[in-house]
Length: 153
Image 1 (tube, rainbow, N blue to C red):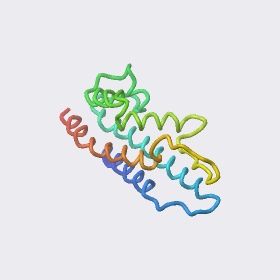
Image 2: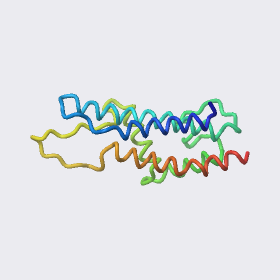
Image 3: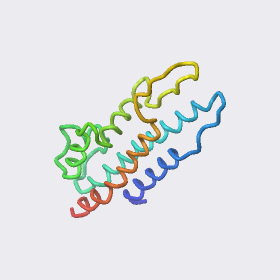
């Protein structure tokens, strides 16, 4: 499989996880929903690392982890600079995705529990699956431009 093929495969798998029908309304429904959301998030993390490998092949970097390559001390590669700028924009899809990835690796995880019907809850935003679907759509929209500049090398 090519690096681009692997990235595409992972994006497709994340999309499959995000488009699963709603969980059954049983005692495990909320846990299944959270598992699907976090599974999609993990798959998006793999896709991001795969993309970073794909667009930096010409630079022959020793590692392709998003934490290292999108950090301030990363290699001066045009595609990485573009992604770093995107990650630094607080309202960008990449900044939101990276924040969710940080939460995923934390103790609490990224998926939110649904409020009990007996509690009054105030929603702090869109559901995680919806947020990730937006990130996925923007990720896929950016792919052709990143691949084009990478292939020029």
